[in-house]
Length: 207
Image: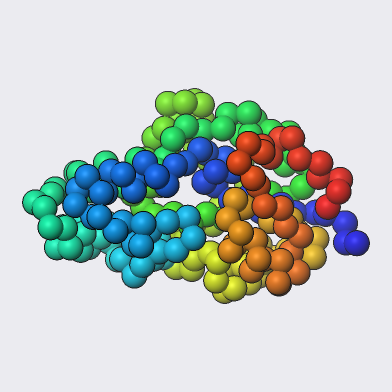
C-alpha cells in the first residue's frame, strides 16, 4: 500500500453544507416543473454543465433560463434560486484543514460556477472571518476555471498532472458516488463522505 501524501477534498457537502432540494423547490416555484431533470447531485443538462465548465457567462445562463421559463422571471430571481443550494460552512472541518496541511499536501476540487463562488466566498467571510478558502490548500481547482467537470476522467488527470502528485499516494474525498468511482478507476485512494460524516473524524491512517 502506497503511503498517503496528498488529499483532495470536494467542497459541497464536505466543507460547506448544501441542499439540492432547496434549489429544486425554488426553481419549481419559478415555473421549472422538471428542474430535477435539469440539475441534481448526479447530473447536469447542457446549460448547467456549460456554466460549471465556464463555457457560458452568468448573463448567458440567466438569459437561457429566462427563455425556458413559462413564467416572467428576472435574473435576480434565478440567482437567488440558484444560490438556495448553499447553506452554512462546516467551521470545524475548515479548522481541521489547518491542522493537517503540514502532514499532507491538500487540494480542493469542486464542480462550481462564478455565481456560487461569489456567494460562498461572501458567506465564508461572514461566518468564519476568513478572507478566502483557497489559502487553506496548496491549490484550489474549480470546474468553471479549468473548464473540466467531475465525474469526467479528464479533470482528475488534469489535477494530478498540474499538482505534480502521484495518484496512488493521493486520497480523494467526495460526497458523490459518480465522482468516487471515476477517481477509484484511475487508482486514487477514495472515501465517499456519507451524510453525517465529517472529515475531521476520519481515520486517515487507514488509507
